[in-house]
Amino acid sequence: MKLNELIEQVRPLAKELSQYEDIELKLDTLEAETDYKRFLNWLYEWLCNEEAREQSQKDRMDALAARKKATANRIGRVKDMMGAILIAVGEDKLVMDEYTISKRKVSPKPIIQNEDALPDEYFRVTRSVDKRAVNDAIKDGKQIDGVVMDNGGTSITVRRT
Image 1 (cartoon, helix red, strand yellow):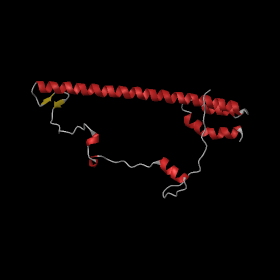
Image 2 (cartoon, rainbow, N blue to C red; image 1 turned 90 degrees about the horizontal axis):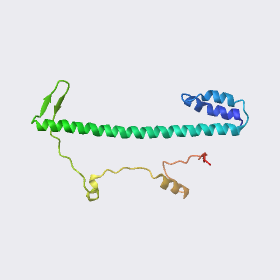
Image 3 (cartoon, rainbow, N blue to C red; image 1 turned 120 degrees about the vertical axis):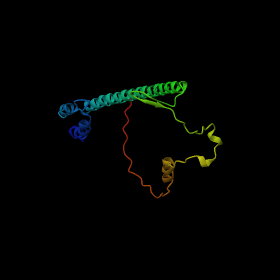
Image 4 (cartoon, rainbow, N blue to C red; image 1 turned 45 degrees about the vertical axis):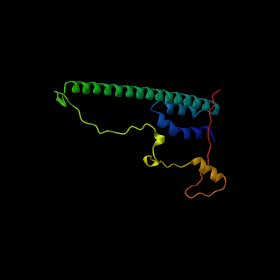
């Protein structure tokens, strides 16, 4: 396969990601080149940048999740304080200019102290396919209804040196 053909295969991905970089321009300049190693180096650099972007987004999402949890905890503490004040003044309901605060009875709920002591009837069972067992059975020559094998494929590994 020629470099130009490879570039045409990469072009749809480039269009998808073009919102981040001017990839189309880079592909256009690569079309004139014939050195596939330079093309691979450019793709590797692109891969590294995308992996760094992905890690950065994950880190940001983790940080935002932690902030969201902290905010939810603060909201809970403020509501607890407002409820404590309502109880301290002996009111069931207070109507204010911008809000109404009231208390209500909450139904008792069970607190599970030892799951192992519970009878089976109080558990939900989730059914899922054991793909490893299916694969092993097929390798051993078993025919399994509802299962077909794909043709496999190729996996690309990029190791950093």
